[in-house]
Image 1 (tube, rainbow, N blue to C red):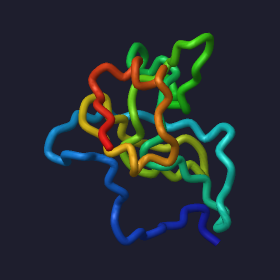
Image 2 (image 1 turned 180 degrees about the horizontal axis):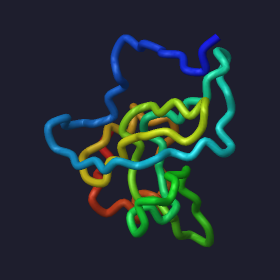
Image 3 (image 1 turned 180 degrees about the vertical axis):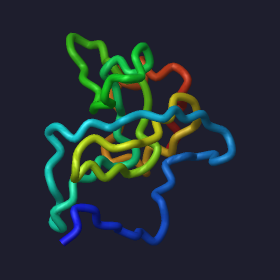
Image 4 (image 1 turned 135 degrees about the vertical axis):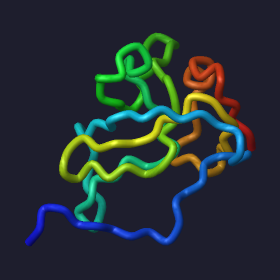
Length: 123
């Protein structure tokens, strides 16, 4: 059996409110702490708020943002689902744009919204 399995999804999940106005950066998404789904796949969902100092050092792994003492280390929003079943994997980090909050897996906190100055969350 091959280590690599290709999964084909019907359509990519769209998190943008206005899909013609956004900026993404290439990142490597960390697989640490990601639980496997019913199919045995470890998927970091589109719309996950990401941090870990990656904007200052692009060699760092992109991880779910953390909020401590009222401040979030959020730096962007994962643009599409990333499969990290076999380890860290390439992804796209949205750093500027307009996001439809209803399409996110978890609504952003007040601290995350404050940290993401170039992202507007709309209902």
